[in-house]
Length: 618
Image (tube, rainbow, N blue to C red; front, top):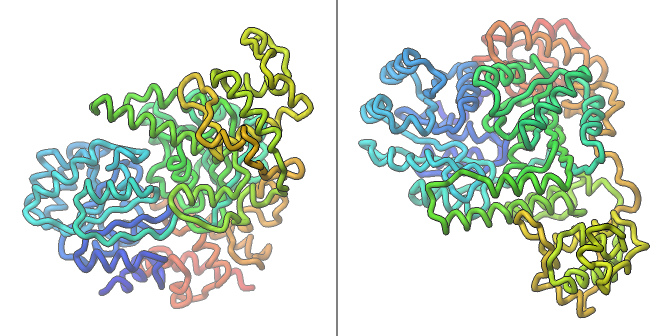
């Protein structure tokens, strides 16, 4: 059996996705390997398939219990024996799993990094044949990554204690060049194959909105998407509780997740979402890494995360099946203040020396600035994200709120000159509100107390709408003509480029909306005739009959999932059900041509799905 046979037999696919074959071939050739692939690109298959072909056990180092449980469940459903070793097991379960591992029952074992140091696990590992150590979520090894976990630093020490060095593979979805280099250095990868397949997720729609009523905007979105499953991320526990309570009051199928709940509550609520017992999860960023639920059709951010790495990772939980999904960020200026407080009061990395902590603090503030600029920019949102990760596109994707809005190029030189001049003349002492109120001519107590009504630029832009002034100030930040400090006072400062504007050398033009911003693509699907099936179907001619069949297949999938006590998407993904609707297989041979149907799953479920399909002749 080779990698192609394994791909078809256990996973039901005829061909590899971009990058998978290169990474798998590298591992099978005995080379250390680093794969940087976007969420949904099939990273796990890159170490799972070699694990089934190598002589020995593959240990998968994974940071979260939910990730291990999900992937082990999927492997078992595909007919592959796998186990996980973490704190969710009782002592008896743990030692029983170790005993089965010693007997060679599991070609793949998922383990938490903290377990690598325990006496019982070390005793097993030192006497077992470890063929590969696969490091999932490998960015956790880097202090420059957004999810640094000190326990990941123990991986190299563990590997060095093994009687024979195994192949080391590492995988992540979000890594800047600095983090990628850190992974290679810290894990001591030896002449590794390094492959970055690109960060783009073309099936995801990106949008930024700044509504006055955030809850009203979210409620409207959910009303436009009945039946869809999604996640709403909030910045604080309090926000999670408020949003969840309001959504429950308004009749939505919703639950909550944050670190303030008990372990049992978190587990129950997560399971309810994974098993489709509730449709919507409202959560802090404590929820999600490793959640492999493939049918998440939207991710809404009820506030701006503190960096683009976190945002892209959280947004990436949408559309893991490759079908269209939407990622919308509802931004407010208060989000910046909240995130600055999180950064300034961060208690992580206390073991580091003061100088290193100061460097990390400034790095976090710079990341927050880049995240804030994402919410300001009128350029293509997808291109902004990709450029952050070192990729460069055309600055037009046709699938984000900016690309779908009408803009015109506007000369804002005089406005820019007045704003920059005001900052200079007040000796860079005040924040954005004071600067904008000054040039707009506001008669407030703060302006009078600061004597800004005596500033030479006071009132010079009185006829320009306040929202336009703020847009220009934000543009000047993005273009680095001005800097707003990341500390608690958020003072507007000049930069080395400010002089170009003040000395009348620079014409400043920016893109501005021609009209009030259009509704995001999400709103336009409100009257989609076929609801769920239309949202997930990839065929333009998906008919009402197809939609009816799709719902029948979903009902059967839910019935089977309850019997097997697994999440519905582990039985078959939405994408596989849509493929069944389009192909209409009538026998085993035809069913095995459906993407995602392997031989093992066919033997378990195939005939039951064929019964439904045979009863629905076109």
